[in-house]
Image (tube, rainbow, N blue to C red):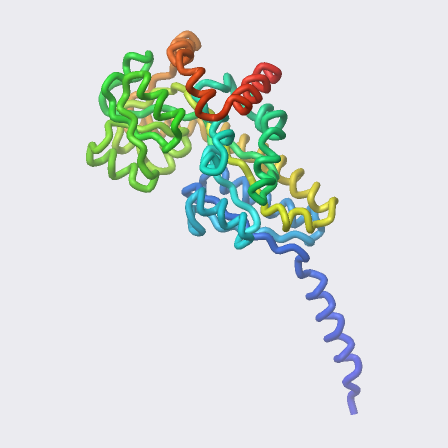
Length: 331
């Protein structure tokens, strides 16, 4: 008669192996960036793989992309309440809780990507951290949304006066609205989900977004001109429910932030590789592209200099001074 003991022993080993493979920390991460080929989504996929490996399988990250869990503000609220663990909103969306989060999107505050990332990942990011903690969140890292460019159906934009009378869709960021109004445009806040049809139906003449968004959302199909104005550096902030973060061992917390830093570099590499392709797609569709010279960008920066006091008022004097000091130091 065959003994059942060896089979029982094998079953016990298999059950033990299955248990060992189960992640101790199963984290839900959500973002609202549109498109499976969006650089932030691709970078987050690499992050999920990386952290699983780096943690020896102790951390498993499940992605919910493309806004399937909600828009940026809703994702922040879900992270606060612990329904999801990690949210990746654009940083300015957190200005609904504190205007200091809108400061990084003041037009022309950052002269380059390197300065922007040094400031956000350094002094100004540290300035924002207690404000996040007050919301029950902590920062894991940053991702790039990119420098925003202008598109429209009326004319190329190469100097401030070219914006006169253009009905331009903007985000609902007060600093953006006041800047475009000052430059003579007619800024029109509108949900991103409504933008393509609004351009198609001439509800607005133009809009402004990073090239990745312009291409991935096919806005070039309904626009005649793209002007590389680099007027706002837009960034994603990666925030985690603080209670869940604090409950993790220090080693795993460090691994999360280190994996996010590697994922940022992955994203930047993807963006750099896509830059030429994006311009080729836009120009291939018959859209006229004009890149502004340093002197032309300086003219925009100087034209908006008159609003520096207003920008300081909008984001708070402490935040404005902390940001401009961090930029000066990074330069």
